Image 1 (cartoon, helix red, strand yellow):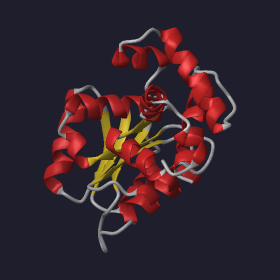
Image 2 (cartoon, rainbow, N blue to C red):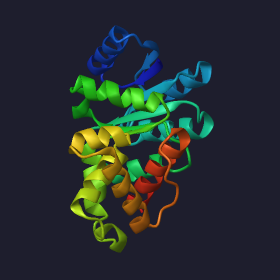
Image 3 (cartoon, rainbow, N blue to C red):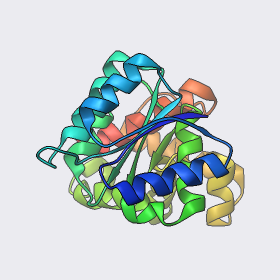
Image 4 (cartoon, rainbow, N blue to C red):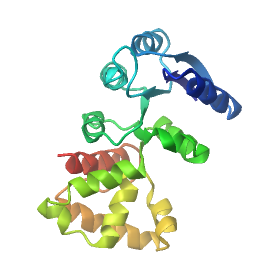
Length: 218
């Protein structure tokens, strides 16, 4: 994939560049602030942008605002944001709209190279990749809502895996159950959450995950 990196830490930025190049990806730009990020995307749109949420000059939400602008102006570009903390509002804002190709990872997860590369690949394929801890916080914060409280423990596990962007087959392997059992759980989840759309392929899959996460972030 063609990737643009935006990270103000020179050490982390150069480390990510080296990692991605070694994995066969092309890093078309590696920048240290949101202004340079937007300019690089406008000049040569990549397949995926990897951006820190907090960048200069204020180190608050410059990276997030740039990511949201990219999703509005260049929806064909996947966006994978990195954050030091679980910031629920940021995750919810990223889910605004009807497109996939979006991810939210904690920076600690970058140290788990395989998980980071897997998340990057999912976003590049137009799917979602949310850190398990982010999903867990969304589930906990939303547990007061009546429909969500109706889920069984197993349905909650399936929902969390769905929100991370896993396929039915991967969920079945992770939970050591059959794929048909996963499909039944997913149907039950959609019924209890009053959500529509049950396909897994392509755009339908991304929309079902986004619908669940939007519900959790409400």
